[in-house]
Image (cartoon, rainbow, N blue to C red):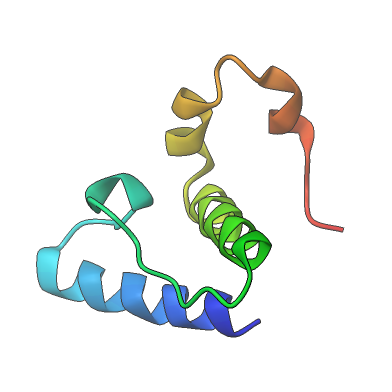
Length: 75
């Protein structure tokens, strides 16, 4: 998926410049081209999923109220 590869490259550049891992909480906002609102919602969710794959422990702190999500994996 194009969004995944763009986000991965952006994270790598950020980590190279800043010396620490990037997560979505480091940004104030995200801007998407939105021909359809549902596409924006899915893209934003996909970025959170990518953050989870890169650092599950960080996202675990955010998902404490939702422990059932911790057992999910990519199929």
